[in-house]
Each structure stands twice: as C-alpha cells, then as structure tokens.
Image (tube, rainbow, N blue to C red):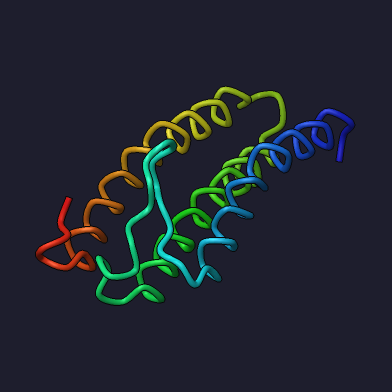
Length: 119
C-alpha cells in the first residue's frame, strides 16, 4: 500500500466512523431515536415497536458509513488511473445515500408511528 492510499484510508475512516458510531448508538438505544438535526425524536408512546424502530435506524447509519469504506476498497486496486472512479463512487454514496436514508426514514415512520402520532 502506498502512502497516498494510507492517507486516504485514514481520511475515509475519520469521515465514516462518526456515522457508524451514530448507528451503533441508535441500534442500542432504549429511547426512540431521531433522524433530523434539531428535531425532537418521537416519544415512546408514539412508536409501536421502539426496539425495531431504533435497530433499523441504526443499521441504516451503519450501512451508510460502511458504504464509504466500500467505495475506498473498490477504488484502491485501480490506483491513480481511476481516481475519478473513487470520487464518483464517493459522490454517489454521499448524495444518493442521503436521499435513500430520507426515504427509508419516512418508510420507518409510516410503519412504526401510531396513527394518532403520525407526523
């Protein structure tokens, strides 16, 4: 592995680990977790199955963070020749992943919010 690859790997780890840590924290949480910054998470009474709701949100964040490692791993064998591939994969992961996470979060809300507590 070259010095450039090691530096890139460290940058990817610094960028992705907070998302994985958020996912682990949400997966283990006993209280309902939130998704949007600045918005209060739902109350326990508003969710039909808090454990499943939290675990699915946690897995969503873990997969999102792990996706950055996957992009890096797919680009490493190509070296400098296909550095744009790594940039492209990372951009798709970053932007596309956010839209997928929003859609999945909304799906979880439709599934786990009690009817009177739907937001």
